[in-house]
Length: 214
Ligand code: ADP
Ligand code: NI
Image (tube, helix red, strand yellow):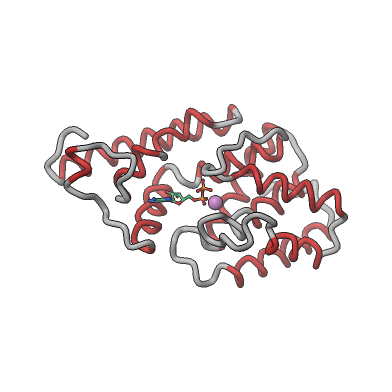
């Protein structure tokens, strides 16, 4: 990992925040555990090497981005209390707290926002990339299972409904659209490769469950 640009103090803060995120997400089995945040952080670092932006703020926002997610923590989503509490505990100055909260606020797909800063664009792309490829497939079914949703339903084949709660339809309703929404060149090229992998997976899945078209 290329973190030569970071000071020792910043590296210590990152390690401390990793421990906090591990503790706070220990009960998550929906694909939003610590390792999701760590992958988003690593992908965001990779994107930052091409796109620029403040590396430290990108890393912190990537690690904290799902703590106050609307689906996972609706009661803290608006004010982002969990992220703010951690940032205050590490003595971030107000401007940096607001910068990190601004990045996190724009990340969510359901929020429908397009980030204005390069840091926001990078963290949003990194989060979306973790919903694609092999890991994205694993997370989609993990999310569905942990929310008691079916893998697929018979109705999915009759009516490609936006309202279906099956994991299969989540690919069509969201995941296959993500590549076209990427902010960065580098993110888009990884997204296209990972989307192709999902398309192969769906072809195989549909053929195994005896449906050639959906
Ligand atoms: P976002 O903020 O865009 O929702 P997250 O990082 O919180 O992104 O996680 C989205 C992850 O949750 C993706 O991997 C996605 O596949 C999964 N997910 C969200 N909703 C569903 C759903 N209804 N069915 C299956 N997976 C879902
Ligand atoms: Ni996420």
